[in-house]
Length: 73
Image (cartoon, rainbow, N blue to C red; front, side):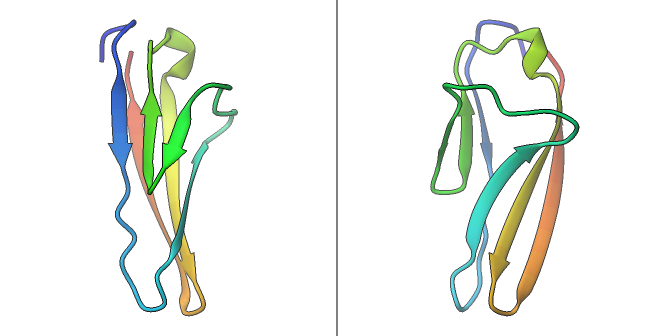
């Protein structure tokens, strides 16, 4: 993505019971101001420092599933 734009990373966690979905940045921290709502991670005004690998984790009583995405800026 281009620096200064907005990116949305969506993670759909389906299951019964409904899973709790979280996002994390592998090897770093998600910077303040980045919004995570209903499984979607939204980064406004993307910066080069936002580049990297992000992990979506969906967890419920049955287990945990993870997915990864790499963001290039």
